[in-house]
Length: 202
Image (cartoon, rainbow, N blue to C red; front, side, top):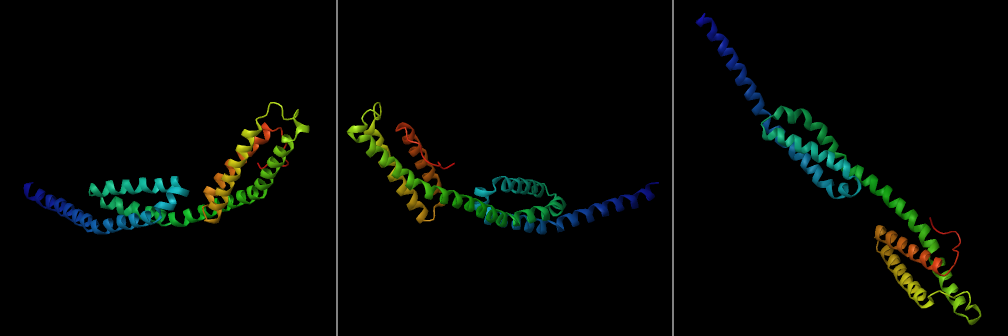
């Protein structure tokens, strides 16, 4: 019985040795696969973090799981799961660029509407102030702080200049954000001056 058992043990040991050798042989390919994933993620991370953060986080989480498997010497797990993660990582840059174009187009549309309306709104505020400052219209101006309104109008005009400068420099997000603030200030002034703005920007 002992003589028969020996070959069985040798077979088991041989198979174990072969398995270990095969596993060890996957170490460098697994390491390279992880390096390729890291390279793709790093190249896309700045834009991806801004425009497709959820997608970036998903790839980073999957990469972390693969690295944990590698640290445990589970190279087959890396080789099996890595290609899909690499493919996802390689699409991050293109997906981020596509989303960026979409966002910039939306901002450009917003700017076009705001740029067409804000100057007219500022002019309307100025005319309303000039109208209310006339003696004949003192009753209409009762209870209104015209000096404060004038200061607010000047501040809004200055802020609008900053929005235009941001647009000219290519900072579309800043331009739109600033223009929206100008719009909000103008609407508040119009309400204080009992002025109905025609077709306000939505």
